[in-house]
Each structure stands twice: as structure tokens, then as C-alpha cells.
Amino acid sequence: MGLTKMSTKVLVAGDTRGRFAKLMKALGSAHAKAGPFDACFCVGSFFGAGDEARRELIPFLTGQAKIPVPTYFILGAEPEGELPVALPEDGCELCPNL
Image 1: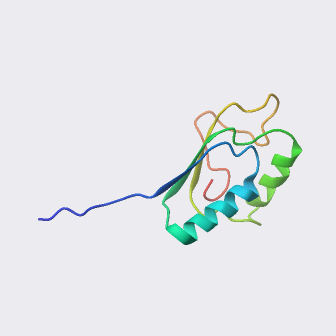
Image 2: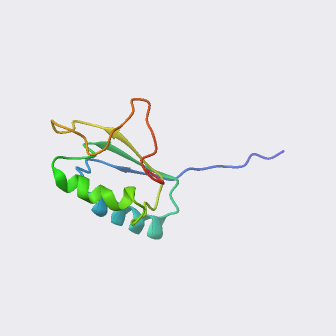
Image 3: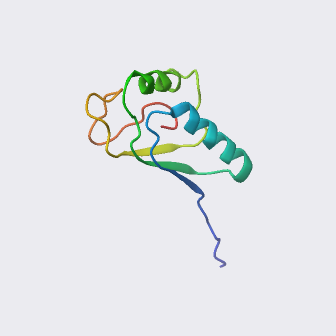
């Protein structure tokens, strides 16, 4: 019985700082050119500060914009204050693929 080689292709992104539209555009381009990718992992400051991050996230949360690759994030040094969404300690899916 032969062994089947399995591989997983992942992308890794650093600080997003709430620039979700820019991140998703870059993910879509990479996915089209070098994919398909199985996942994207974002590390560092994901949400950023201010209302701009909240405004950029809304189209994804409402389904108006799509996330091209399953994307996971680990919060880094987020700015002081409230995050744009409530996050349970054990994780959750904010919207499809996020």
C-alpha cells in the first residue's frame, strides 16, 4: 500500500490593524495566482483602532463582502479601548471564513 503525500498551503499575515478590505484583496490575489490556499493565519494587531476598522469589518459581517480563504486571527497588541466586535474567550466564527 503506497503512501499519499498530502500538503497544506497556508498564508501568514502580520499586523492588519483593521485594514480588512486591503487584506482580503491581497488574499484574493494570492489565492488566484498561487493557490488554492487552505487557510490564512493573521498574527499581530488585527482590529486596529478607531471607527474605521469597524466600518471596514461591517461588509464582511453582513455578507456584502466575501473572505476568499478561511482566515484565523490571534490578537496581538490591540489598542486600548473596545474591540469592534464581542469575542468569546474560546473563539468563534465572526462570519463565513473568519
